[in-house]
Length: 191
Image 1 (cartoon, rainbow, N blue to C red):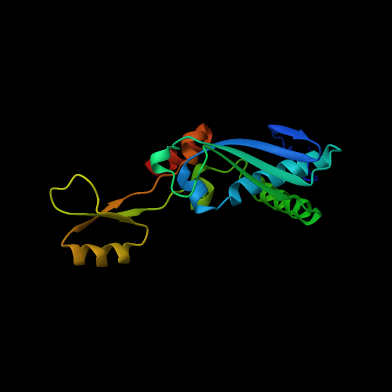
Image 2 (image 1 turned 90 degrees about the vertical axis):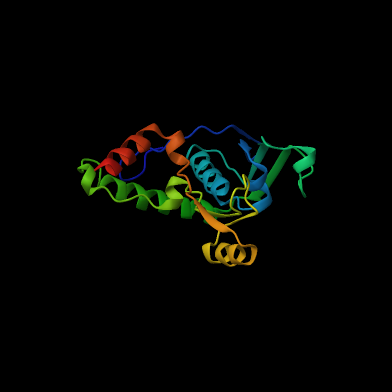
């Protein structure tokens, strides 16, 4: 579909039938356990908007996730290697997606011919940044006693246990999947 600003938006929906979009994913148990599916929802709302623009009405989105690290030994509260997540798509969702797409593409158009030094830094969530972790490790040990997201909590725990805190830098997972973004990001980092 071409937006009023001339930018074409396209996508490949895994399945659409009976007013429902289904998107198949592979994921880790930790993603399901955390319960934050905002990225999945955003993607399916864009698909629903695209479907609407192409004359197909969608009122439900569903994700079917195959948990790649599922094991009966490690399953916690997750009881199956297949997880389904379903939610309604509203008219407000469709309108907000269109507004967001126009705003975002207008912003990106400003940088179409910009020099690499003039490109804005991507935000951590845009790079799917995992965040740093702080592992509390006793000297000589090969495994952490506990891993924290919060540095202060890790330092307190380390003091109580007579251990040290090792910083494990987070990763920008999107750079693994987007070769162009990875090239630009690495080029800018080298400067």
